[in-house]
Image 1 (cartoon, helix red, strand yellow):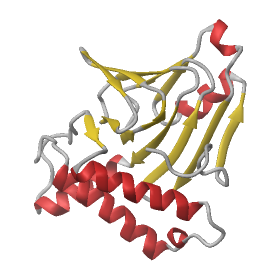
Image 2 (spheres, rainbow, N blue to C red):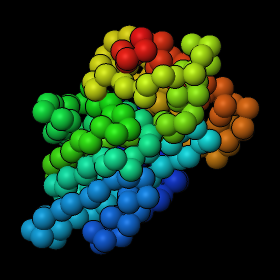
Image 3 (cartoon, rainbow, N blue to C red):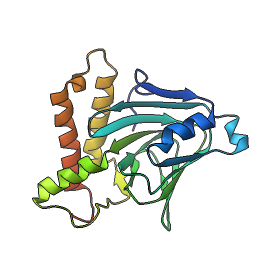
Image 4 (cartoon, one colour):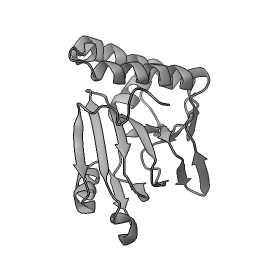
Length: 209
């Protein structure tokens, strides 16, 4: 999924560094562990850009080198991660998935997984705040949840909901890269979040489908 000139969301820089420890400290608070070998650390050139809304974060990630990241049990959020350039090698449980542009990996809380990115690759990340997504699901069901929400681990960006979310993410990123972003308006941002979360829960397979 390519949108505009890389890097994306350049107006919203979070980290630009060559220091592994700085990256580790930043990701630790989100329940994510970061690792890079001593050899690959010499080529590390991290660019993390992101925009945060009340219920989600849209981000762009380019590590500049071969790295691995793990979601830990401390992660409370849901992640949709589509590569833009290069492949992602993903291990979730006993499954190993190669995720190329046009497909996204989907991770849920308490699901410990590893994502390996090769040198020269970049990706987007859509982080859905766990409490917000489960609250939306409870509202759709009209009843409290009796088990944690678990989303299916892959999303095809070429068809169905995946194609729609890819288009809306492109539009949102283009909007955030302008001087007068419509999504900076709280009412517009809330409507966008509600659409993304509701469409995901109605269209993407999960244990409450």
